[in-house]
Image 1 (spheres, helix red, strand yellow):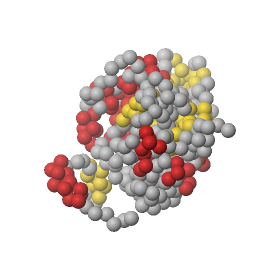
Image 2: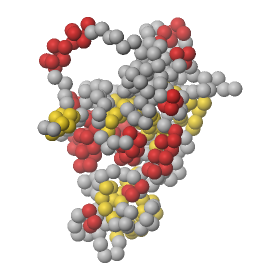
Image 3: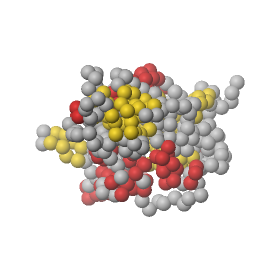
Image 4: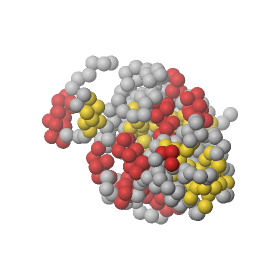
Length: 402
Ligand SMILES: [Fe+2]
């Protein structure tokens, strides 16, 4: 019997669908009545299959001829222009054919709902993956020196484009049952170096906002009860480097979200491993065959219900491993960290300006938390004076919830 986690190797897809993007970043699709229109999200309606000189709409079978290079194509069809139904005019609208998902969005959603996780294998375009490697200084760019002076969002268009990746956004909105989906913290890079056999490592836990496994031996953490059908968070892990067991891929107990409570103490929880020196004294948290590792190529996005028991991987190789981790929450959950300051520093940057209009709108929607009351929308941001004023009281506060 294996002495390590059960490895599920996700094969690199031989084929990807194509998305068709207009100059503002909207996606060309065909609705249920056969009319072409522009969508601001990507579900099955916006999925096309590319053949050399044509694109075929997968659901309707409609086919358009393609002339020009992929960055600027004219789509030929009988009599009308492909964007007409959505209000674009004339025949001169040029579209861009972009890298799409391996599977149909509805297939991913079915799997996600059944299993509590899904892998969008190699869903990011190759140029986006390379750009993320470059700013991470890993893989093809491991000799480059990391620039800590700017937030990763401001270092490259690729970070915003990845955070606004349309298929994963649609899946999360459907899985959480709300279109109001937010980032719980600014997108960040998690770069994991080689383990030395004694450093502190992360124990088993459920992610934000649950944070189960971090509150002593209590089965719950920040969310005090199970949440049932109400999904309070999805974690979106973007593999920048390929994820492998030896290279430090995240370890999961796949499907454990159904327990709707934190991981067992005998697996070694985030609370236990949060004590400095715990690993040096007790060794690694549970890493036997009841745990799972998803090995996936760079450019894959793994979504999982935040209740899923997991822990950070341990990198046994010399090669640094990069990932972009995002705790995603419905709009009614308070964020983990402030996103407003990062957002304000992002708007107008070169990286922001390189995004499409739709990607910018999505990023604003993801990063600006707001109160929507009778007086309209009020953006939430940190008030430093007020924070200073409450800190002493918060530090003294006694809790009686145990
Ligand atoms: Fe986590």
